[in-house]
Image (tube, rainbow, N blue to C red):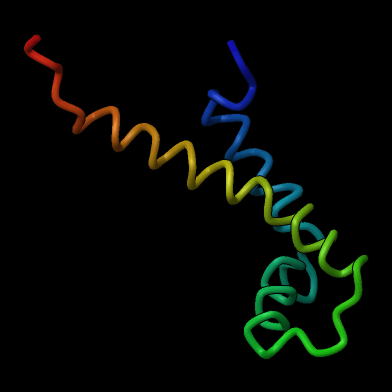
Length: 78
């Protein structure tokens, strides 16, 4: 079984790497606010940090969409 197909591991990644550090606010939220504010002053390290903390969330969304589309896909009648 692939790690990327196990929703429990993806959720664990979101709650740890995706939200770390937790205080004073989750790091990914600060980066999202910075990007939505125009990303003024963001350097390469800040973008790498955004993708590092955002990857688990992207995996969770992709996994959810995959399961949703599998559920609604009609079997072909050929």
